Image (cartoon, rainbow, N blue to C red; front, side, top):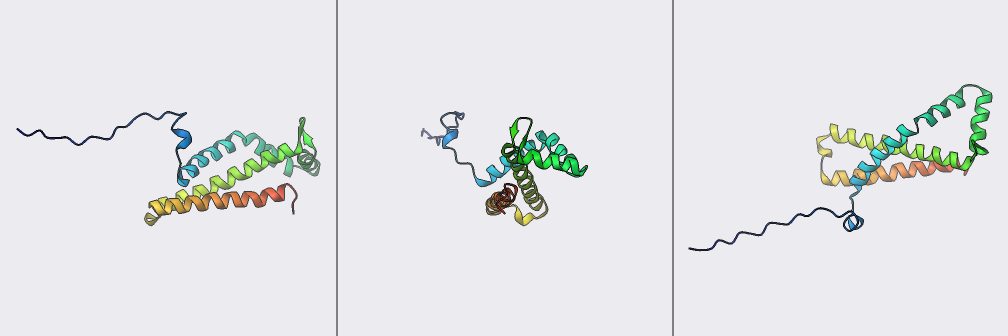
Length: 145
């Protein structure tokens, strides 16, 4: 009888969070997916702040003055710069969530868009456009122009 040698199967192990995850390189599409969820969570958590900003900015001239004072001087013992940073986080969250959502809709509608190359390219474009627009609007928010 001949001994048949079975090919050795690959060995799969559990991931060690401290050893394996720091060296793992997530592709751009993975970053966009994670940031899409994070931006949605940020918008949901900061919804009361969004409602307050909208309400005080459009109610009256007095409330608009209070709104601008919060961003220039501060409010509730928090300096205005921190309020601007919160607003900048909301700007990024909205832009990223919107652009990533358009990317997902395009991939749902177009069958040609479901490829590894399109996923990589569209993820990089999503990251670049959302960060670029956030930079432009952030410069406007902080008074650079």
